[in-house]
Amino acid sequence: MNRNSLIARNLRHSSRKSAGDESLRRQSPAATNSGARFPANTQPAGQLNPSRVNLKVENFCRSCRRNRRGAAVVEFAVVAPVFFLLVFGMIEYGRMVMVQQVITNASREGARVAVLDGATASDVQTKVGDYLTSAKISGATTTVSPSPPSNAGYGAPVTVTVSVPFNQVSWLPSPLFLGGKTMSATSVMRREAVQ
Image (tube, rainbow, N blue to C red):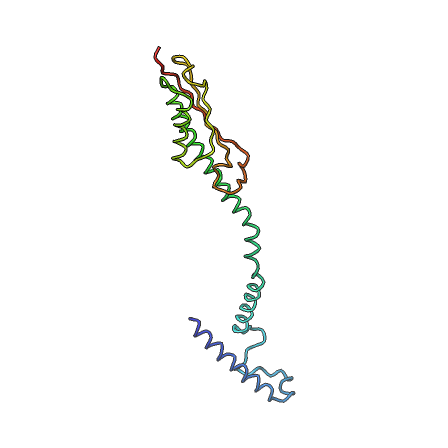
């Protein structure tokens, strides 16, 4: 049965019941007290009227909805701090991994220049600075050991270290987890000078 036919049936049923109630009121008190049965149109006392049950269920559902009006705001207030902490943490650690990769490559480029014959510390710093500028990273410090790299003999290790404070490269205005950290990368290569 569809909804319209149920509503029509309930309306007919309730109109019959009201007509039966009128006939009961018209009977004498003796006839009603003498155990006479209800007229055929009325509903026995033990049965529930479906329209009344539906109305009660709808009223109950409405009251439940009314009581839950502020629930979404409370749930958001509980979940939002954790959600934003996770989002900002992912942004911060993602940026840290990215910058670490860039400074590792920059130190490798600097070490490659440092092991060549006739290289100076300023050549190494220029190469590292150019690489970091192309990656839009500023505020890095480059250290070459030994300085100048020409002091290292043939086959001796030359070390280039690039370090940058995370505050200089963070995408967030105030980093939550890595604010005071300094990121660094070191590359070591052997000198290729002529013996």
